[in-house]
Amino acid sequence: MSRRVGLGAAVAAALWAGCTASPVAVSPTSEPAAPPTQAAPTAMPTVLPLGTVPAITITPVFPPPGSTPEPTATPAATPVVHVVNGNDLLAPVNKRNSLPANFAPGDLSDVPVTMAVRAGIRLRRAALEAVQAMVAEAQAQGLQPVVISGFRPYQEQEVLYRGYVARMGEERASRISAVPGHSEHQMGTTIDFSSPSAGYQLEVAFEATREGRWLLQNAVRFGFVLSYPRGKETVTGYAYEPWHYRYLGIETASAVNASGLTLTEYLNQR
Ligand SMILES: [Zn+2]
Image: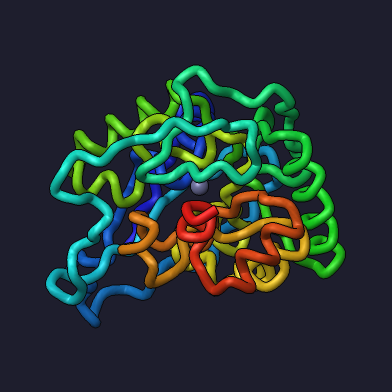
């Protein structure tokens, strides 16, 4: 079940820093299913012009209680956190590896509002050029992938993570939101996509849209990899996110795909 929350522009601008983060309307699928007599889901979302501020819902997938083992990403002993160089496109930024709190890339540029949900979303230059080429090709085929979030500074991660923890506790929050310093979004090379057909939401339903399917098939050609695939929560430590793509460059993205490993495993073993 999902809910929509209307947000003021200022609030939305802060929250759309992205997927693993926004403390709005998180609806785990472990909630009881709606009774069959309930009205059908709402009609297709209204298509909004790019650059406007729609409502947003984030619906991560949690496995049903008891159906799968709890994630093993959190060992009993306190894990050693390594601090990595965020300027390295292939830096392993994950549960075990963090970026310095003061790290921000030096070559951030704005994503054109013609392909973003709002103005002011920033990416590193290489990632921006790649996403522009990718979106242009998708648009030429009549698709409308939309950038929902990009670079997310450390301080913004802190606010969002604290919000999640307050609402659902640390264990659950950590499955959908990065501990500050551990977000790939801080690298400026990671993008959350949605589409008008998905109501500009970061929801698992995005995978079934034409845009979601196209990205899954084609992103690697432009150097992007899906960081948190379905069914890999125990490996990545994060719930499935069909909207979250990280730029690695074409050569590495292809190698990750060919390896059959998750990005987390691939980068950890370098
Ligand atoms: Zn994301």
